[in-house]
Image (tube, rainbow, N blue to C red; front, top):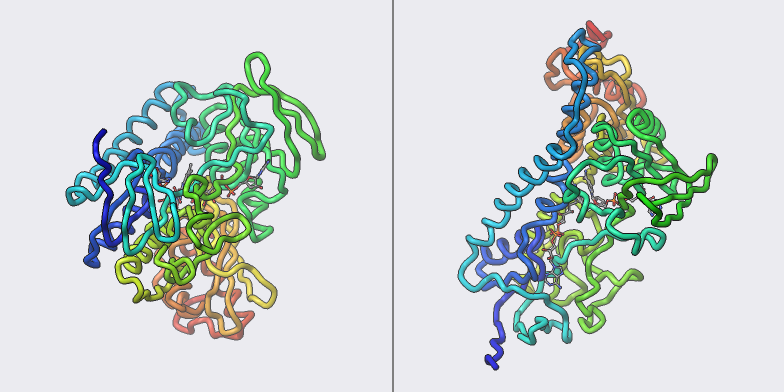
Length: 471
Ligand SMILES: Cc1cc2nc3c(=O)[nH]c(=O)nc-3n(C[C@H](O)[C@H](O)[C@H](O)COP(=O)(O)OP(=O)(O)OC[C@H]3O[C@@H](n4cnc5c(N)ncnc54)[C@H](O)[C@@H]3O)c2cc1C
Ligand SMILES: NC(=O)c1ccc[n+]([C@@H]2O[C@H](COP(=O)([O-])OP(=O)(O)OC[C@H]3O[C@@H](n4cnc5c(N)ncnc54)[C@H](O)[C@@H]3O)[C@@H](O)[C@H]2O)c1
């Protein structure tokens, strides 16, 4: 039998996804000898089964929608034919390119850094791989990601029940799809499938989609997605495998039953910590079994263990995984000289059409709110996509604190608002910036002026405040 080769390093990173790659890189940059441990090194969740394949499917849906919408402009492209197999083949082909890019990162690692295996805690600060090799390290970063949660009624019903681990592997578009869960995954995939000609019903046991914080934004989102799919909110579902599909029974205002060729379960992604034997780690765990940590240092208590990405269940988003990895890796290398880092303004963006975004503080009592209606906005009208709203929040001095939006261009407008909030800008300061005409950005002016009015902040005198020509 080959002799076991224990491994030694300064920083051991568990998980080679976005957070782990970033942590290893940051620790190495800080001078640490690192190990990056993963059972597969398959590339990141983002590239394989997350952000990128989902956006590829959405891109196909946009193309179908544009063709369907073209007659509004007097452009008649003829009848629309969607080749489901070609749609899915392109998703996989382009996805594989993204995966190959992320895998190139592993080729660039110094010799011996990548360790194939599954790590778990054997004791405080002690890691072991399933083949028995032990890892001696000064610090550890946990970056094991998240996994799809499948509620009991949908378990063990066979391959017709999909998660995003399997959705992008289906050879053809489903005939009739039930989507369980109206969070970002459910909404993005349900609308995309609907636009690609799939009959889609989206079920959520809550009455709020995408955890929307603003009623006007929620109404706009509901109205938009209802054009592409059937929404059933506030209902419980049960499911059974039957000939040719999965039968779903639902409760609620309009209870019923239907058979779907496929079901996509998108009911949340808890952290993937099960196999880590955290009970042996000596770390303080919360009620869900997740290590208690400081989000400015990513340190778990005062231990030499750090956590980053979806594994910490804080903000399961790509840019946060990457930032948290960098903070955790740098601090793991410097341990015990751990330094806090400023975190970015909270920001979520769901890629529906129109997109829905939340930035910064929520519309709490005492916050000033200004609103822009995009239902008649000039540039949006030229493109026959005038709909939705933007709510912008500010403190009593007119300083922007948050925003909720569901309107054309929200993907970009929400970035501008996040940057404005993070730079501490006030409504009058943003109003004195240049606004080109005709643009979707001009639509923001109404909300900003309303904030000026409500906070007695002067609208800049050198700017006209009448209605814009054309909308
Ligand atoms: C369908 C979908 C769409 C998404 N779209 C977006 C989007 O548009 N924008 C956005 O910001 N976010 C999006 N996200 C979220 C984003 O993809 C995640 O927040 C991010 O990829 C998490 O990165 P991570 O490094 O934490 O996890 P991962 O990339 O999953 O990495 C975890 C790694 O840990 C490894 N691992 C697990 N257990 C062990 C162990 N015991 N030992 C060693 N290794 C282990 C795994 O093999 C894996 O490689 C989406 C997610 C999904 C599912
Ligand atoms: N554009 C993006 O940034 C993007 C896109 C996709 C995913 N993500 C990330 O992935 C994470 C996971 O996404 P998600 O949409 O799976 O989770 P989520 O937790 O955000 O939403 C889950 C939804 O499912 C509903 N639900 C839960 N249990 C249910 C049940 N038994 N029956 C019916 N409905 C049920 C919830 O009410 C909720 O609306 C998100 O938190 C997000 O951070 C981000």
